[in-house]
Image (cartoon, rainbow, N blue to C red):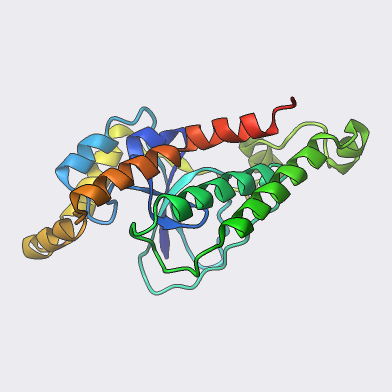
Amino acid sequence: RKQWLLFPPDSGKILQETRVPYEESTIYSRLNFFCPSTYEEDCLLKIERGPMRVVLTPGDVLFVPRGWWHFVESLEVSVSVNVWLPLASDCQNRLREALVKLIIERIGKGLPAVREDVPYRLEEILELIEKCISDCEKLREEPPEEMIHKKIRKTPWTPPDLSREFKNFVKLGNYLGREELRLFLHQQRHRFPVCENEKIQESTVEYLNRDENILKKITDTLCHSEIITRVVDTLLKKD
């Protein structure tokens, strides 16, 4: 079995989003869901709408919409397969990530990363950004009639539509209420002996010197999703 917690895309502020440590196409939360502290519990309980909790069993398929935050934990030894479904907006997402890569490579060097990648040359990143801009412009200039032919139906599917149309196969998830979320976080924190719990909490502390901490704040600010979106909109704006 595999447990998922899913938060809507606009939860970044409560979840304290960060791009450090850096991993391509991944935005992390500073909060520890595996063994949350009382401070982290207080932060999460401020969220207006609780997360959706799903426990997958063998044979289940979970559809995660683009941009949804998720915490995943294997409750038992398990193997899963992830499939990325192509979207028309992918070119803009690639452009966003190329801009983040540029910032990380030029400003965030030396900050923690999930893995040490082979450094990109500036020319390679700029070529990637140029290619992404070109792809976005081509998509925008595509004749409307061609886009209509590509659609299977005139209105997009909604989760309730799918659950009604395929009621034997599609099941909607349930959101946790405030007390359910509080109980879940309490159970996560107290499932380990006290000494082990303290070790886990201690391991989540960021050990950065003063300069690294300032650099991290600058990098996180420049890589913030709202800032990157504004840059993309400006780059794609017609002169």
